[in-house]
Length: 321
Image (spheres, rainbow, N blue to C red):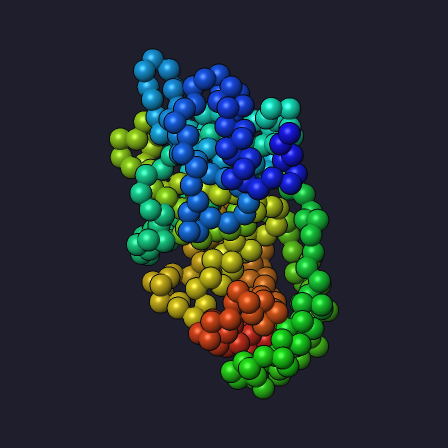
């Protein structure tokens, strides 16, 4: 008997494929499971064909298991013809008697924007995110985030990592993190008292943005955002700072575009209030993220990235203090 709690995503996908086809009333067929280089999380993803009626067979993507928040965002925003999210043709929270979310949605052809990123693509991606913020805000109330990082413990781990590993500019790192630790109560208080004003994407980057071409049967052409597995309530600068941080050490790839400014403009264009002091919040977030980098050396240990994080921290500490 299959136990979803202990089976991996690939095993789940193959064993539950017949139940998934039954849940789609026989309209789903030719499922082929795959995994992309940029995919995060433990979900299985597959390509398939879906019968939309009257001989209209379309290429779709299947994803399972999928969390309730991601399923809700994709399924409910899909009801809006102007939403820059994939069209959803079927979804559910249960499969073959198990509490297991699944979704069948539009397949977008071609590589994500990260394959050939330019300033226009970044601007379009920000505009799409602004539209998602607007649509989500109209549907669901904001709620306080449950998970709060233990910044004190993270910075202590960062100091330990500096002691135990041969890291360049270690003295500068020690001084900057000690300075951050002295200011930590102020920084954390400011960040935790931020307005909760957005359903954040949580993994906002060009690998999760694709283009719907002209003439698509699914809807209007333009950038479509995917993979809302990490979506949560927060302040929208979390998405902007996340995108910016990914390019520490090779900022030239952003083509002089500033993610915080891009998303601020996108929110204004969508008619969403941006009157709070989001620049100070963004700087606070940057300092906290930069100071944390040595604690995650196993995945953020590139020399150029480390140097950029250190310079970010040193530059902004006088401002956030």
